[in-house]
Image (cartoon, rainbow, N blue to C red; front, top):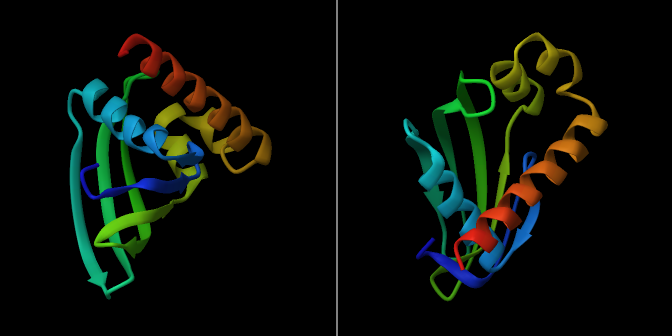
Length: 133
């Protein structure tokens, strides 16, 4: 979060687009709630104004207690030595299957699921922000 520019724009399939403090608070929320989060990264590449990395997150999904191993590709835009844009991509259907089992497999690739998930994650973030003021 310290490397995020104040005007950061973050996006991924689970949260959609978050800007500024919302993006920073998302990471605080995820890290503070996880009891067993493990993150590894590889293929880090940077130039003066952009970068990319592959990172893997392994954790227990709180709602179901199921183990998730998420393989993520990140792209960054840099400005003034800070990350001003961070875009993560991953297979949402594969994530849903790991997090929710066969039901996640069936609906995880649909727009309905993605939109519903983003609504729920943004509400969870708003609740977290209210409780931490």
